[in-house]
Image (cartoon, rainbow, N blue to C red; front, side, top):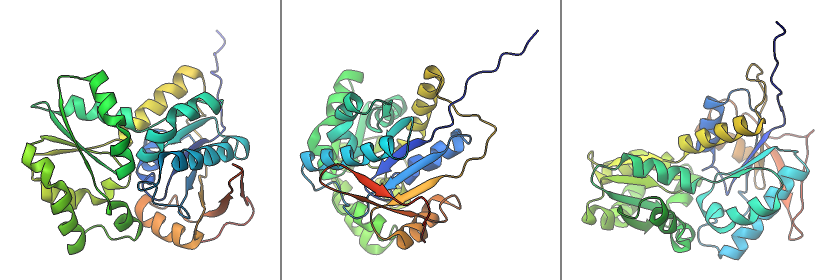
Length: 288
């Protein structure tokens, strides 16, 4: 009997974030789907997204998505930024021509599954919390759960500077997380992909009885399911070289990102975005 060979699609998967936070999602994707090549964009020239108006974040997301689809030729987009997903996910799904996955719903599903007493907390950027995206999703998925949300301005900036466990971070966390401690949440969703880098500090402040949930792994599972159901999986036996692009200082991005992600991020390429929604990058001139 002839062996049936399944079709494969070795085009890359595009992943983007305002900076380093989406590397938590990239790490989960690399571990779960080792045959898939990633093209990651960290928009470090314009971070943080959290304090920016939703319309501005939406424009940034559209610019990056257009570059990843038109220039990098990705077969799927992963919006590895809660602020961008809250502001632009539906727009991207309508206009990109490839499957688009965000991080809001996968992470929330995991938190709702994990809660023991039906009291879930969500922390995120000002933009994410103000958008109401988690509140709306929770009403649809589990209206009986008591959801408490808190914005945490300053967390992203500490992570982007590489400061994840200083006394200053701890003091800020004590202040920002106190409302969630007061209402007694038993599960806390880290509703920003930067926040897992602060997990030790956050766990120390919240206490050992509060379970921390990251959206990275659940997002990776969603990506795998979509790739398999749409026939877009790459050859699982291959060992692809991932591409990392930064709109800011590429040497700094490679140095800091390598510490956060691991050896896969040894160098970075420069990419620029303009108001017209076009991006450009060099495939021949990595730096860092």
